Image (cartoon, rainbow, N blue to C red; front, top):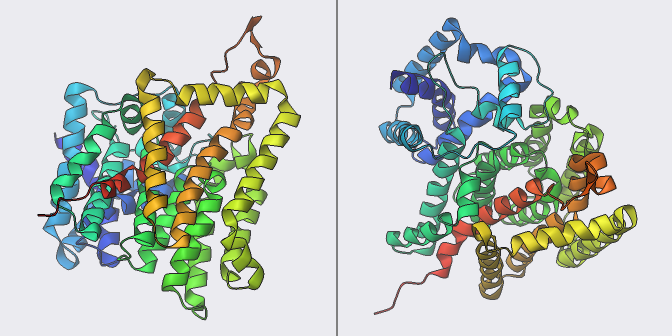
Length: 453
């Protein structure tokens, strides 16, 4: 128990301080995300790791906590985070709720390398490295992904309940979805998909429904979302453009240069945070120049969004998105021929499989989006929800790229040891779909309507 408290203390103190400085002490579900973001910098600036694994660094954390107690103290924030983390750790210790995926050892190796003050070039996001950094000779905090993810899920659910003026017992509506095996399996992995999904959910809620957080916090979560998964910049680029366009139109004056500086920092910072992880891979995500180009283009498009061409482009955005996906599909077929078709059919078959509840997840995902499309009054909201559906299509259509990268010669030849393969290199694509699904499933609360008496 002492080890859990000590390691939790080291992890949470930066988040407690940042939440106090940002004046969001009354929203404790944000604190753990601030902690994750702070410790992400230790993957790039490795000397920060002295705060974790040295006595002097631990003493500095103690003094920092003392400052928080004197200047910024909020006992509800402290209790919420310590008790939630302790509860999840307790459950895992006694029931073994975690799903240890095959890439767990790669992430652990990256965390160990980073804690030894070496720059890790292993191709995993810095957030995942953070999740496995907090251990000593007796104990490791193994449930940090679940702790941070559930913290945000709780906050997102509370905000939706308040915004929609619904009874609190409507939160029970989330339980059936979390009981679907493939969803529960994803939530309980030591990866950053669950965290990433709830960050996007928070951004969607703040953009379309609630609009309570100030712009600094909003942009902080935009930055953390891009940093949380290396592929987020690619899969969610169209959606990010639409979301940020909607948010900026509603909340920002065109002449406010400070906002544009903050936006540039928020969007370029993830490349710095994940720099060493990005250059450690061999796929398109490891092209730093291309990533910088995409971020630069995103900022330029947002700044010029009121020009006639971009107004037209935004108004017909999903049409251009569909054309882009169609061209990508044609390119995949030209490049990989029948193997591309094989990848698409395999994924479609997988998503419609009753095993592990994939078909339930797929049907619920589509119905939820159809519902939101039908009952959203504003065109931009309908465009955003339809864009989410197209993002799912993008995940499927782009699957041959992923299969080729990770299947290598075995996938290209279609054989393993002389035996024709049934393509099993789909794992990342199906996880990407579950991340997308988890991003919007709390919004399913809005499907429920209280009875009028």
